Image (tube, rainbow, N blue to C red; front, side, top):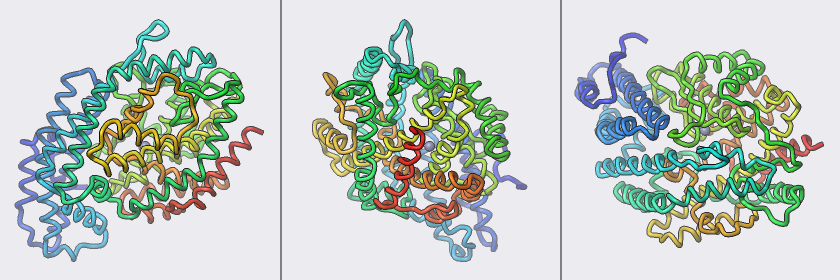
Length: 568
Ligand SMILES: [Zn+2]
């Protein structure tokens, strides 16, 4: 690439630095035959700088939720740069879409123009300050959760550190750990409910302002869901109920019988992941002690799969863009954030030595591979793969690496880890249906009371949840949706995990028969970035996009078979 429009050292965290370039894009003459393409290329270059500046501020904040300075810097960007940026993007989109030579552009730009037209359709200036309000509330919710620690077993511990106790074989220790976490969560539950109330109000208003009757309809457009609709999601929920729930109940029954208890409690099995103490009383799986050890072993494992993946993983380590260990003042969860200008993936997580942490790291590495595979594409829009397919990259990596987990378990316990992970697949789909159904209900009923919200949540949990005795913790159960950060920070972003899991399971099926073919399909489809529609990306990887019961049953049937195989 020669002659970049924006100098490499531009500080794009400040609007005053961005403005001259933005004005140039809005005002320059466009009379030559290649002018429109030149404009798109330069706009992409500017967008890379701004995206990376925002990413670095977000990373800085989530790595230090207790730093007022980092939080202030991120919120400055949110309130000063983002509003001007959305107005600018709208004007630029209008300029491009309205240009007389638009139809002369090659089909390379078709998907980009489709996305621009959709963004223009939903844009509304009154929504800009509401977007800022929204981000402030999300940031507050994140800070509240990041600050949560409990005094347990003689030390102050983060909540990710507490997960380890929930795998303990001592039931009373599990109950004590679970209760300590719940008591801590309940201290902030009122404020988290208020924040959610405010978010629902703001989001409904955003939809009305943009001319939609509900936030659901607005979001299906805003998230560029061109290839499936609300009915498909509802059909998917039904397929999950029919196919996964009988298996989930069977896994729970086995757990209950092996633990020799009459009914499971929330400290016997994690509702979302299916994790819990080993049912045969074996000590918890501990694949690594430090994040460094995990990284070193993963490098060997990925090299064992292919030189290509091994090389890509080593690149992540060399670039030193990993923040993996859990500590106080770090936001919960894990994510991969691609630095668009440097074309470097950053990985964030809270590793505490659990099997679930290993899976998270492999998941985020899958996102990073995806970013690296399509990093050669010139324009930021061409690299901005759809999230439904992004999660195929990450979720399939969890399944494809299963055969390589032995190095984390020299004592032959990898089979246990594999079985736990496959059970996790069976548990996760009903959880996805739960979160998605809940969001459909919340935004279809924006004027709901907290009481109604709790009732809706509990009835959805009855449909997709485990049969458990909640004892005296019913108040927590009613607000247990608060743990799912996506409900705050990424509304409606959840069904994607389910759609992607169906793709990931198909890649895994291929991998079981022919591992090289699966890895080739993976590389080929991921390197397409965002240059194909979602159904075409699925077919490029040899996958079918579908929501019906028969399709799901064929995939989950193979998961069941594999679990039975491990038991034998
Ligand atoms: Zn992911």
